[in-house]
Length: 72
Image (cartoon, rainbow, N blue to C red; front, side, top):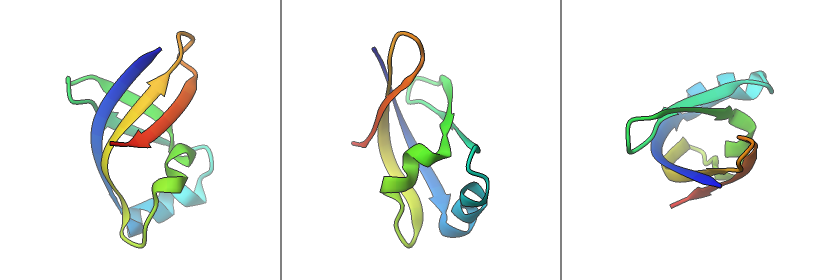
């Protein structure tokens, strides 16, 4: 498994755009400078009235399939 740590800030207004498109992707830059892309739906449990903000750790398996997304 591989883990990627990144910070992200998505305002509530911007999140509304992701919400309208269920298959939309989020693109982020990791702490090591790598670009990652994952489905926005994986952030749903981290949404607040301000949107999504914080430092997260994305875990994927050896087939690049989603395993988990946790707030650090």
